[in-house]
Image 1: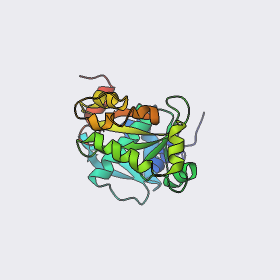
Image 2 (image 1 turned 90 degrees about the vertical axis):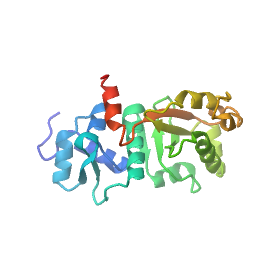
Image 3 (image 1 turned 45 degrees about the vertical axis):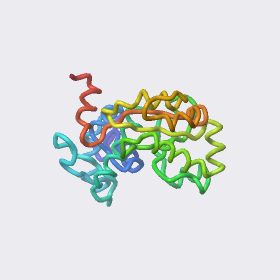
Length: 227
């Protein structure tokens, strides 16, 4: 379909994605099946988004919604993790705004990053957990306990409509042990988690590996199948 030079193909899609995710990365868009070059240049030129140059490995830029300041390290890694999960790992996944989460789950809905996904079949809301320490099990337990303070959320968990996605570092060695613990199997380092019963039978759980700033280049290289 023809588009005018003032509105290049994909510009609305790219802008909407950056507005929701709070970040855009050229190479991540490409792996999601979108060629973003013309759209990004157009949106920067029109002042709709901001380019933060040479902030990522190999001189890559990232893009932010208009008026947003460059991200601190932790926020940048969290936004990258969410963008990778939505655009590369789990297609048919939409980052949710806080007001949308409350609309779906009530005013006592947990805070934090949430997505709406149909990647595994029926639609569900997932709270994203990006570990910042090595004690992944303790973080998962805290997330589940905090979320369980709302009766509406507990009900949604039981119905399979609300769950959790644990986004591990790209080079993590605990993906398989974590999956076993979520099934209720006792494995070293995850005994406390396993003792809570098969959590994946109490709520939907997903486990994925995502890059941070330091491993983004490696993750992109792995996606391309390069050694």
